[in-house]
Length: 156
Image (cartoon, rainbow, N blue to C red):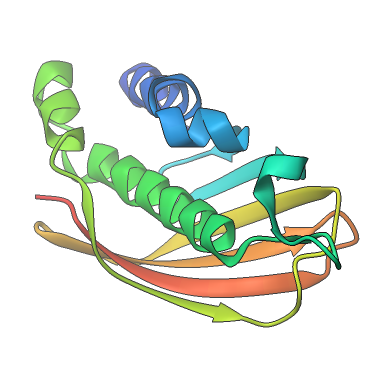
């Protein structure tokens, strides 16, 4: 986020606020944006009782894993719009954010979701005028890879 222009920073901050405060499911999970740039996003959340999928092993629910990967991928796809629309007015870019939606999501669950704090990272693999493809990964606080995903988002 350090090399972003003033307009880009304004729009990235808007996205950060939107994803942290205005999306009820993200608030339920406790999803926080740790870093955001035009090409890469890092989110984080802490384990709590409402997120448990296996009450015996106390592991993270698979739906939470896929939701966090989906949200993090959607966020980086939205950030990519800022770069593509760099000459458009801020209001036009903000309107474009409302069109972002997941077309396809693939999640590979690699290990049980044990941990206290989870971090998801996403980057853009390809972004066009209509569709963006993102790659996501979820780690626990010990940097154990829990799941990876690939998302395709409508961006235009």
